Image 1: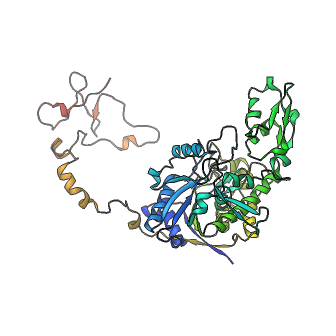
Image 2 (image 1 turned 45 degrees about the horizontal axis):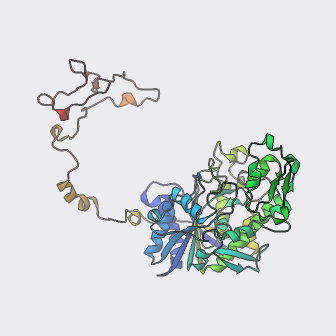
Image 3 (image 1 turned 45 degrees about the vertical axis):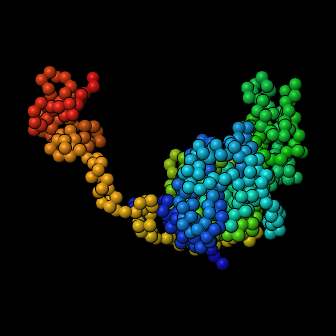
Amino acid sequence: MSSDVFFMDARSDSADTSLIAKAITVFDAAGLDGLISPGDVVAIKVHCGEWNSSAYLRPVYARAIADRVKELGGRPFVCDTTTLTYGPYSSRSTELDLLLTAERNGYTSATLGCPFIVADGYIGTSDYRVDIPEGYLLKEAYVAQAIAAADVLIALTHFKGHGMGVIGGALKNLGIGAQSKRGKFNVHMGGHPKYGVGAAVKFNPDAFAGKENDSEWELIEDVCPLDLFKITDDGKIEWDRGRCITCLGCLGVMNPRGIFEPSQEMFDATDIAIGDAALGVVKTVPKVGFVTIAVDVSPKCDCAGFSDVPIVPHIGVFASTDPVAIDQACVDKVTEAPGIPGSLSEEMGVEGAGERKFDLAGAAIEGLSEQTTINTGVVNGLGTRDYVLHVVDPVGGERFRFGYDRRPTRQRFSRLFEKFQPFPFDRHDGHGYDRLPEVDIDALKPHDGPKVGTHSHAAYHGDGTSHRPANGRGNVWHPGEEGTPSKSQTRTHEH
């Protein structure tokens, strides 16, 4: 059986075709409005963006969904979860850090119109364990507590690439983003006897150049929260790899130095685990829907502290109740699209329409597949790759007008303009402002530069004549104005 995916492209020329309006339009078209009953607590799961990331979804998308939830009688909150350390200077690993990063990126209760919550608590241990016997690799998942407690979950996803997951879509938003920190260790193969960092990566201690040749050598020790790396007095690296929990904080320090050689198998296993953990979320929350915004399709995830040039143009907005189908639809649309010149898709030679983009332009190492997580979701019963794409028509501008005052202009402003008239009718014979009656407009339109001279102290008419006061100084007035120019009728040219 196939699933329904609802889609609107990224073009816009009216209020009801703005991407924000389209997000609500596909939300309703997919029947996600029917998931929400009066009084339901609704978690809207977003990626709030890393510190200095810029491609993450603007908060207005979450605000629009939250407003729609409130119209339906629901009680929304927007949420994200704490991360693993991922590096020596993490910015979302605690609730405090995540809130500060989210606020910097615009995710606050004021902008969202509802609370912003760190769903797994201060350090990431507030969660709910769920059995997933159907899982291909994982047999349990740890869902962030606030998400697990919700009546409805709306996964609001920015579709993009991902260094480890290859694609960052709806499945990743659940399989990593909706997991607690405890759950993220599970998904990233922490402690796994074959696929964890401690077991899987090739360790080359001789690649360390020595303290005297590495000005940042202390990072090698400081990157590990369990203090598993030591630099000995004779400049050797010791690693207690058996205790490694795969926080991933060391990879960005070790890989560039050649001390670690990445393991493709570890990455592949994580991509499978993402699909299994996503199933754990769907089994936990009674009702789940998906809205995916495929714009600013950056090659790497919003969890990177930067955002590269998008690899394809804006694609559009999707909605479904099947996370597998919606991710497959997004992948297919990106495959169909041409790559953006100068982007990583061109650099990797996959810029052609019809070429798979993310295997090379998304993945951190070659050999990963953009289909691994999606295929896992098929095998474990979470969803299907087969879908029917329904192209949704706009519903009309009336629905998306400014919601706080829907009166037309005359009703809103006639009385206000009588009391506080903003146009100065009493000046310049009712024309209001000191302006020339006519100028040569066409003279300033040529692409090779203006076709009139530059005279900083002269006011020009359309016939090329100017009016300069006899003293050559700054006060300029125009024929037709009565009497000596008043202060309000003059302008002073600064020298």
